[in-house]
Figure 1 (cartoon, rainbow, N blue to C red):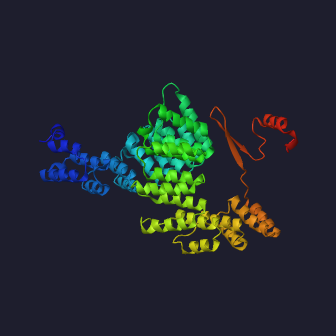
Figure 2 (figure 1 turned 90 degrees about the horizontal axis):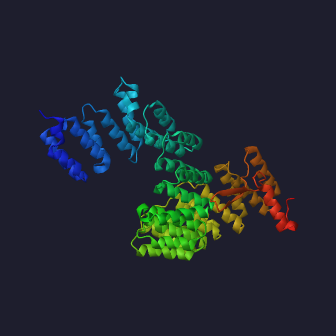
Figure 3 (figure 1 turned 30 degrees about the vertical axis):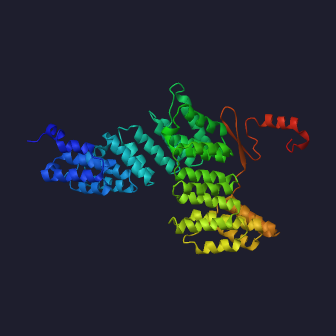
Amino acid sequence: MCTFSSLASYPYLLLLGRCSSTTELRSIHAHMIVLGLVRYTYISSRILAICADGKGDINYARKLFDQIPTPTLFNWNIMIRCHSKSPYPEKGLLVYTHMRKQRIHAQTFHFGFHGDVFAVSALIKSYALCGEVQFSRRVFDDSVYMNVVCWTSLVTGYCNSGMLNEAREIFDEMPERNDSSWSAMITGYVQNDQYEDAIELFHSMMSVCPHSNPKPNASLLVSVLNACACLGASELGKWVHSHLLDSSRMEEYGPEIATSLMNFYAKIGHLETSKEVFDKMTRKDATAWSAMIMGLAINGNSNSAIDTFYRMLVSDVAPNSITFISVLTACSHGGLIDEGLNLFKDMIDIYGISPTVDHYGCMIDLLSRAGHIINAQKVIEIMPMKPDAAIWGALLNGCIMHGFKEVGKRVGKVLIELEPDQAGRYVGLANIYAATQRWEGVSKVRRLMKDQGVKLDPGWSSLELNDGCVHRFHVDDRNYQKTFEMYEMLKSLAPENLLFK
């Protein structure tokens, strides 16, 4: 009789642990079928687990799973996790549904899932990835044993659904946190444009255990750098850079961190430092080249951006979709119409990249900025997809810049239909009416804003103090804690020019 101990030492089982490709796995599996070993649950489960870990494709794993007469809870968990890591995580939910229909472990609470943290975390993640965060919460609430992965998966699910208050509530209740937990919450804030909250939470993380030398992961640092770039928090961003250099971890994190640093320095106007980071990269992928091109473009160095694009081609790095958005942006900002048109054509004909709405947006912006409003309209007409608000907005800006008032009126109305809650769209149309002295049109737009309950978002600026804290100031804001002291200082500096008394 073949026992567990004899199986564990069987040569083919040892080979399974060493296989490194789908071809090797299938060969070993074929020999096991011939020898009749796959009838043992332990053997079939091992093969399935190796499949799910990336040594075989998901379709092969599914065929193997379907041949198991009575799948164990371990087998079901493997298939759920396998699908949750795939491009189609919703199929993991189908596996779960099928498992429930089979009434696996029906005698236990929720089929035994209350005691299996791996299944719980996989289900929470699968539901969250499919946008069904309410089901993620149900699985979470019905589970007795949970590890940090379960808690973090739910935080991520809430953040991806824009439910930041719920995410923070779960985060604050976590009995323990690891770097992935902090990263999930901070990244969630950044993804939802809550940059101050992201930076504040990062400061909290670094101060929780100041003597334990915390080592934030790459995803977290990328999010922090993005928040710094959007807020202009230069000191914190520089601290992150210094931290990476001092700990000699730049190479460990790879090009993702270096690319984020480049983007950060470019957005705060420190272009030379951005170039230095780029030049020191030992491995430059398409993302890094694209970031450098975009950094040059947004800082007004359009010709340098295009030169960098051609340097990229000489370096045998193939441009991707993002690269062409970067270089077309450079053409738009520099008014390089012919260059932009040629690059757009090369993108399609030479590199086989189908233009997306973002690429068309760049072309509309290029033509509109240069005053070629009629040609821009023709491009919109032949686009294979429906133009979005960004494209109509680029056309409207061109109409305002170059006096195409009638076209601007039509475009302004389209924008209000597309984004009735965006105050800027009403302002754009009102500006067109004002330019033609159609004051009744201006009044009509203002009434429409009032009727729709649309309010102008106040302008703001931010200031970073030496302690790394970022302070945001809104227009006509009298609620800031040091407003009185600020105005007293202004009075002492230029009392004759002070409008507010």
